[in-house]
Image (cartoon, rainbow, N blue to C red; front, side):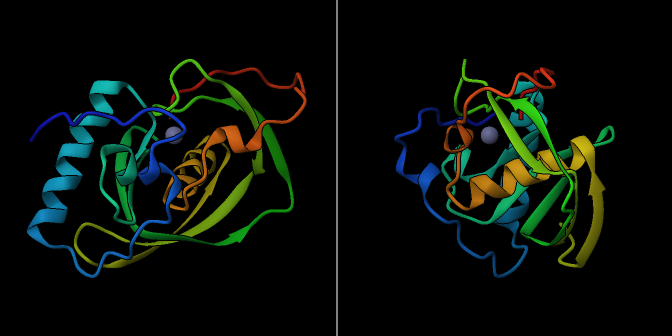
Length: 159
Ligand code: ZN
């Protein structure tokens, strides 16, 4: 297990590309997940996507409750009409905070570390963290949401 360097900067090509479907939970994938867990704990973040550590794969971690879950090939299959705005940071964009409006609740489908399909219903901060990570898997960064400041809900978080 190892703490991996986190890529930073909006111009890093891998942070702007759509990630690649993971075909199976191989030993390499299990190792990458373990290393990403170490990296996330070290960075004291709420989530981490594989492109942030230089991997092109569709894989991310999210802190849900007080557990870290790994989501492979995650896809949002439902989102609420209700949205919520909150200031977000990003481990790949140090020092930048952007107020991002996102659906309050989502349903996400993904493959777990045992290769089993899972479906979870998430809301509030849990839903926000997973949406932020899935954005990374689609090459989207918080700076893409820059809008005139809403002034609402100024809670600061690192994802
Ligand atoms: Zn991020």
